[in-house]
Length: 118
Figure 1: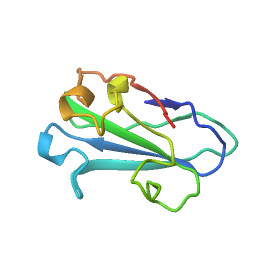
Figure 2: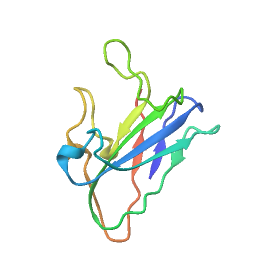
Figure 3: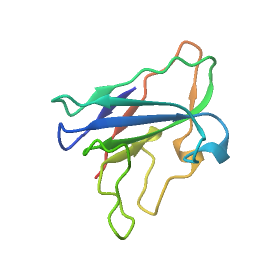
């Protein structure tokens, strides 16, 4: 998977992979895997997950600019760090629904692109 659009080269991009269970998406302990990739002078990164089987998955990504391992928000609860989801799911009215983020991984794999939003 490729993540692009970081507004700075500081910190890392955290990529979280979820499986087919709707109730696990964005839930504490619901992830299948997570990778933290240092930007190291770049504004784009790539991550690769070795998955056991084809099926439905979802990705949530954020730019952890201050490298504190937390998705930081302002006092109103609005994000202050960049974020994105598989399928470039819209977030104009809150977090996207699982059905908007879900993608089907075919046998042999797939390449997913996520654009960060700020």
